[in-house]
Image 1 (cartoon, rainbow, N blue to C red):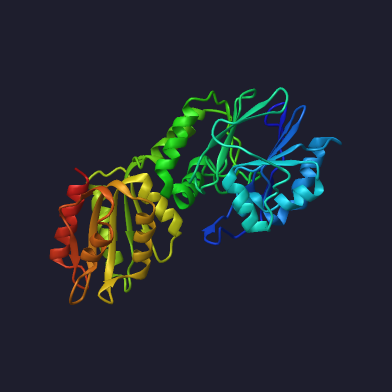
Image 2 (image 1 turned 45 degrees about the vertical axis):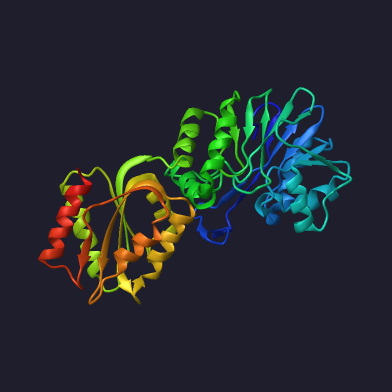
Length: 386
């Protein structure tokens, strides 16, 4: 695939993978993107996952048409992008690696060699001339590893964005949900903790004339770039993307679930535009995390368990807090047969989150719904739907 006349896509699609990074379910597979810039000198942008080295090099050879690559630009050292560095350098002993100083330290850690005799170290604002194309390197530390650089080609106005603007899913499979759903799950699962660093990178990108974004995962973005940039700005500034309420719950014997279902019904009756309900023990945890950041209000409902909270709820809250959850309204529902503690524990776990508005009404279910707890649910629904 030609990205432009001189920039060729040489990435691969993975349809065998079940869990990305050992934890994210990827039913549509995964893409590992790589690009070749064909000019007076040839630059290859990143490698691919270790299982696809031969397929990737075959793709490259087809684009080289007998020529030899001059540079391998390594933007990110995570193994799904860097695993074939040594293989590439052995196949092309004339090539030079271009990357950040920290990336070469990581190469020593991963491969036992740092290519000291075949490297060019670049930092903020450094350039590499290929002929008609000049590449400018922009540092992007902690988006989402410390060594990351992104690369801007001023000739074709292309931003090679490393893991930024990536999404789950192979590129040869149509995603029925479009770009945003799996891009959002990818962002908040993998990059979400580093919103401040993404904001810094977006500010740098705003000074560039960008017409195409080439990420390391997912499709090349060529149209309506303002949408993608603004969406990333919302995500990385922890803004509310969509109006709505998420109810995340755990239930042991079904009574907490019954209370949640009643709340969802009352919210809809009171005119709330969107109510998303997720069972943390059964539904996809990363998707539940994604929804918490997508919508402006979160209801947490769980049982008191060993004087604490149910394990899946603890895991969920840990996911939120380690990603800097903020700028939201939170309501609490608890269940306990003799000494309800869940609301207190959940609030304690979330006390470090910034700019949280706590709902005035907290629902306490004593074993099973009764008139008192149903009235509390009614009051909470009216408060959240004001």
